[in-house]
Image (cartoon, rainbow, N blue to C red; front, side, top):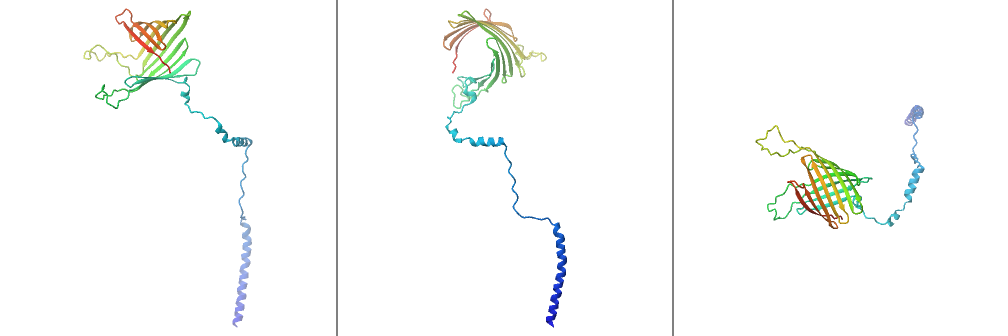
Amino acid sequence: MRLRLREIGGRIAMAILCVCAVPAAGLAQQIAPALPEVTVGTPEATPEPTLSAEDNAIIDDALAVDPASFTHLPAKPLRLPSLANSKALDLKRTDRPDGSGTVIVKKPLGSEWDANVGADLGLAANTPSVYDPRNPLGVTRNDHGSGAAWASVGVPNFASLDARVDPNNEQGRVGTTFKHSLPVGGTFAVTLQSRYSVTENLGQPQSAPSDVPLRMATPGDPAAPVARVWDHENLAKLAILPTGTTLGAGLTSTSTDPVTHNTFSAEQKIYGPLGITTAVTDVGRTSESKSVSARLKLNW
């Protein structure tokens, strides 16, 4: 009896499974077309871009260079471009016994005219670190360096134009010079020169000194400051070429001085760069003055 019941229960369970499997199979057939097909495999490689003929030529030229060929080239010393050419920059330095000095820098410009730019620098004296018998208290001077920039453009043996700016003194100067030299035979040479210049005070001009005592001077009548100064100079020279002697005569006037000053001079070359100059200023006047100076000019 028990075996019969087990057989009947197994058949009933099998029938239930068959009934449930039929709708599940139909549902799977309906859902399968809606799902996207997924394929598993290696990704496709991106194609490499093709190079143009010009790019290929550049690469070929770079690969054709042999680095070993550079080892046979002769070694060249490194030089500063501005100092390698002696004509590109002219430096002159003068030292004084107290430790100060001056440096003149001149730079020719490449042009058809005689054009130059430069600067005049004043070097301050160094403070000594040891005892100086001439300065037992160790007093230091208010000595700062100074400098001025200038430029000039000229036509040889005719005229030149000069400009100068001095920040230390807050002054600017512009001048022009007409100069012409001509030989007279084979023994003499005559030089005529005329110079005009104007000096402008860039800062606050200083008042001119007054002879009136301060307690007697009226506050409403101060001394007129001098802001612009005009200068004029005419010079003639006669050079005796065989003897190295030069005779000169000149007239100088300025807007701050009502008197025109005359000067007579004589220059004599002694030997090589050594020369002596004698000058007499304001001949025949109470302010007449005489001077004798020696000159030694060396270039290296």
